Length: 274
Image 1 (cartoon, rainbow, N blue to C red):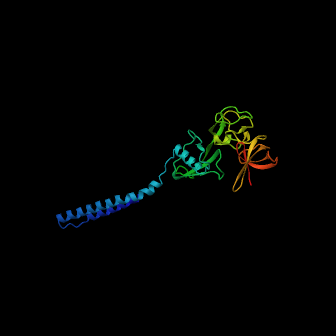
Image 2: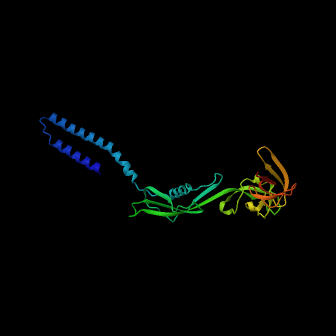
Image 3: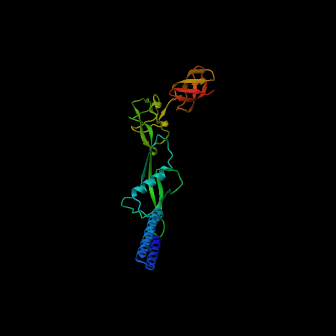
């Protein structure tokens, strides 16, 4: 608008000047009018060159209606930035379906997006989305529910397992399981369980957790290792309680009948820490 007013004023002045030119001769009058026309053309070209400089500021304030897919994507990105899981996990972020329930207003950029609370990401989360809008006298905002599904690779039973069954390659496999379906310490590598014994009944397709089995079971004959800086001593003994890898249990040395505390290091194996 300002550029147009300036242009009109200058053009009017040039035309007024041309009308009052004192023409002493016909030839001189023609030259004066041609000069006026030339000046108008030069000004018009300058006007066209300066006009684009003002367009970015106008474009940046252009209000546009965000699509639902844009709102979904912004909400997903806000949640994904705060998710902290192991690299082997599968993550699925699902925003609430707003189809037919929401018509967003026109928004001036940028659209603001943030989590509604500072708590850690859980199964159900809330994202706040808002913007400045010419449609209302106040900033527009909404709250969007976002569901997060996290799955981990977990060793599960391929058939019904009963107490005293031995884990082998035929009765277990690995599949992705929702983290909220796992109750207890689970295993991701089926090969690490081969040879361990089932303590509690495990249904088909159910995760195998540490309480379901024992790498060393009470009454089992175990290999007892004792390591020093220079030598390794191995003897046989009896487990006096159940244990899994990394757990400390009591064992009895068969040769001396002495009871020792040892750490389970594998199926049927314990180590006495010197």
